[in-house]
Length: 87
Image (tube, rainbow, N blue to C red):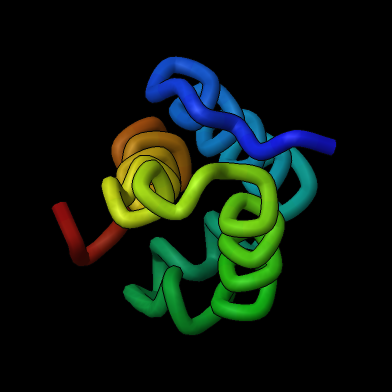
């Protein structure tokens, strides 16, 4: 499979992976936000997603941190309805 070489496609992939993490780990995310340890609680899943993302995009796009931004947007910002010490 060829590497993704466009910004738009790389962002889309990053958001799709982050969305899957959100969908399949809702309980862990909720608990992680409530206990203020989200990134520790989901470290394994986030790193597995990062590995997948890195394997699918061109190196110059990987360094642009689209995956990290998608994780924050989808796993943190979209969960502001959850009671957390972070906000």
